[in-house]
Length: 315
Image 1 (cartoon, rainbow, N blue to C red):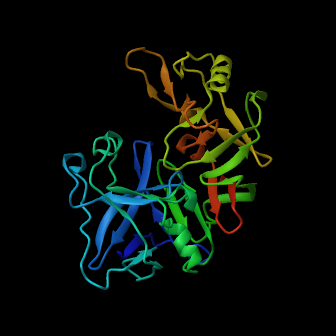
Image 2: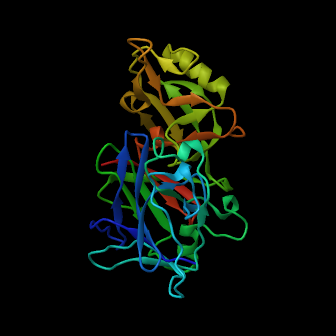
């Protein structure tokens, strides 16, 4: 099994863990780098809290992987461990021994280069979502006591984005952290207290999960329809230039979703109208999906030790 190293930035949190400056692709996807094997091969990957496996394009991957760097397994007996949190300047890193990954033989359309700039994906959700017999990377690090704390944290923004492994970056948030317990250990699933517009509650309590690998915020069609009826939008989830704040309640904390974030661009076929990053989706078993449109408004802390998700105001 390979050695993987996570290339992190030079900034260090008080816990001694490091953060990686994530690349932003059109405010739709944030990704960083890992290095795999001995000798090391470096790959750009999407860090996804909505899945649990690592996959990279394998040497047999065909035309669907064109433009992506191909992972070639090494025959060396030293290429058995996975290292995460590597800094090429200081040599610091986190090691997960005998970590498994998937070498893909085909990429689906969503992962072709024009839709997905990274080479692959690192899943950060719970083991129950992983392929049987495999363990998610961060779970391996925690089980092997390889990280200072069983925590990782995200800031997603147009600039200054960061994934912190082994702690939370206290320079990126302010005030207290509100924690919601994980209610089902598959996704990072929590209870959403409700959603309101201009102080008026539109959606009551619903289950959902926080997903760094999804661009949009999605919910059931009935509640999303009620939301857009309040906003004045059309059934196709776009709205005619209305700048209204939407508030989500989680663990007693109000998280405001800025219209600058959920407005994801103009509709070229309908001048004066914009597409929204909040969409109806009944295919998630009743779960709301709190993707990047949500995460960009808060500092998000994933605590595997206490099985909870924390939210704090951005600094």
